[in-house]
Amino acid sequence: MQNIRSPISQRVMKISPSGIRRFFDLVSSMEDVVSLGVGEPDFVTPWHISEAGIYAIEKGYTAYISNYGLLELRQELSRHLKSRYSLDYDPNSELMITVGVSEALDLALRAILDPGDEVLAPEPSYVSYMPCTILTGANFIPVPTTVENEFKVQAAEIEKRVSGRTKAILLGYPNNPTGAVMDRAGLEQIAELARRHDLIVISDEIYDRLVYGVEHTCFASLPGMKERTIYLGGFSKAYAMTGWRVGYAAAPAEFIEAMLKIHQYTMLCAPVMGQMAALEALREGEDAVKEMVMEYDRRRRAIVKGLNEIGLPCFEPKGAFYTFPSIESYGLSSDEFVERLIVEQRVLAVPGSTFGECGEGYLRCCYATSLSDIEEALERMRRFVSSL
Image 1 (cartoon, rainbow, N blue to C red):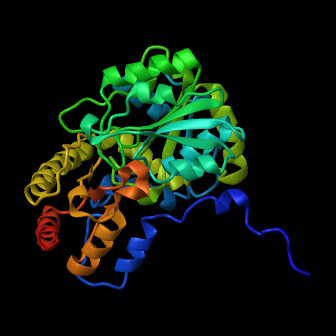
Image 2 (cartoon, one colour):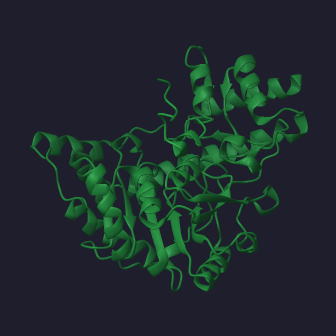
Image 3 (cartoon, rainbow, N blue to C red):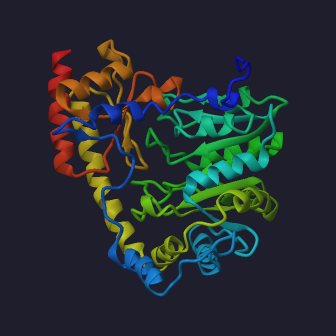
């Protein structure tokens, strides 16, 4: 008998496959490809951090631990957030360790959203934001940003889209894919809006340490925002620990307890050896962070200058490790541009459309790669655009 029901969830069927994956598959069989596509540090985890993880394994720290995460790590995180952002989080009830910031995002959305709720989020945005929202049964409402405003979301544009179903604002600054950084004044306007409309704010600040010539403002540190903010952070970017999969959420106990209910039935806990490496990163990793940020800044200035010189106009990103140059003058969609760039010049970038409709007409180019590779990529891109 014919099965009249789809075997696949309707929510899953609404989600498109990652727009990034197709291009990575395309280059997997090619040689001599210069990649500006992978959004992760090219640095190896500093040895003393890796050694802490190895030591944990050697000493037999390989069992389950508290669903909240390693207590010593939560205590150190509490001190870190107090020192850096003047935030007071109780390590026993307002902090939890997750399997990367990706899990923290998923938990936060599932903990607060019901089907039919709406989440407002600036676009272009990180590729997981929309799918994770859809999987809750809620609706993702994009808030366009523009290069004229350096891709900083405007509070007025958010407010235009607030409705009776709006539950939360999802912010991701410093931004992936644009490299945009919000200034304090802009965030204060969003904070005022959140108070007035009684909205929760999920603030993904995984790139908080990677800023250049500006100061990062932690959203939860704004007056009156700690009690309505779920702050997400982690170790992947600043400490070059992507594969260790250690992130965290900081929020009022009510939110953390709700997130923990999901976490304890699905993930249980982040790997303890990774958490012990993260503890070492917080205690002794500051010098390594500063060195990596200085190198990223050197690469940032080189790639922005180079992109502008070869005819790919690019605003100056002040955070993360991405540039977002315009290709609008060349008459190709971002998908077409990227595919031809790969085939004709063996350079991998990511189409801006991957990050939302208003990303069309742009590329994401990651400069978390060596300066020599950046220079080679720029020369190949110069040849490519000259041929158009």
